[in-house]
Image (cartoon, rainbow, N blue to C red; front, side, top):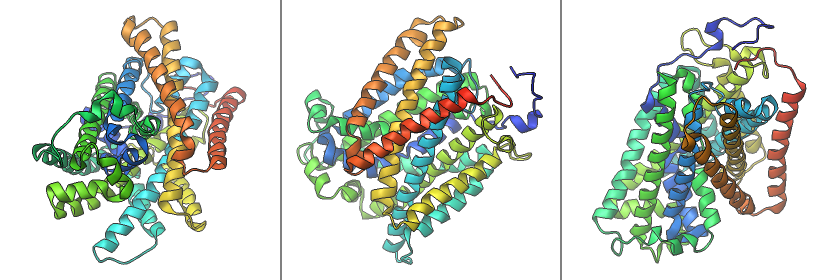
Length: 472
């Protein structure tokens, strides 16, 4: 319903266009999760400083919590089809002010996670180019090259982006599956065992750190609703895509991480990870698939990170589009490209934002991994968790008020259980936040204060500023 006190813009300028289906949305979500990045980048750290051989169980727990959360999320998608996703859900359930707070958190989370990935992707691309005899150029050069390519694809139709991500993801997932099967069929280093899935293994060491990295590996699954307006039959597509995406990511990560554990042995994998975390997965690949496959994996890690960059770029562009359409961002950002049907103005703004943020770290001489990636990823994980907790509460409140869906499990039980699970994980992440961002207590407090302030500013804007156009 559109507020009649303000004239509605032409439909061609206020609605997105696309024909993306379940598979395309799932690809976009899994791309944001960057499977190879999780298996080759995050997993070794989880094993080294987390709970060792119990790391695979952390993925299962994270997936279980998100699947339960997804029940209410999918149920509410029948009432809300909006590219603002979490922002739209929180607004629908809790009102305008908390909704704007949620939007601010989402923009902070996706902007920082994209900047983090630019740092990791640029560093990885530098290493790959040098390894194969290319020029030794500074990391920021590769960051801006990647940024230019993402800008071009983000400006175009989402269908084109989905096709590009689809090709990259098929190759990426095929390599992960090949490694997993090779380890399992060859019996690992010392045989096959289920130690990784026992309570004692999961609870050993620091399970909180393992859960922290595991939940971070799912960041971006909100995209199932973000692309609802560009989907065929969104009321059917969004729920199916949500379940398929979370389930696929969870199973893929659990099996792949178990295979990496078995490649070294449940009793020796933590020592191996602590000795050389950067090459743990590459070493396993070289042993069980050959050195050529290990080289291919290094190249595929770059494409994995690129796919994540494109997915987050698209998500941010659509958030700014949603805010503009409801009057809380400059009206020009709601323009839709006449031919591509994309929020091209928001895409251009996102490119500029990424350039400034990554450029600031480059000018400061920061390390692209230890500082840009680590710090910004830490901020993003906490912000997105708070955002999901708010969404869970909004779903509960909405279905208590609206009785169009009377399914007890979908509208009452699952949303409450999902909220409790997310609150527990959020508490663990905050408790281990200093470790996540590199050990600085002062920096941890600064970043946590930034997250809180972002939400408060969003709430204040929602309370004090009247929108030029309201869409519900």
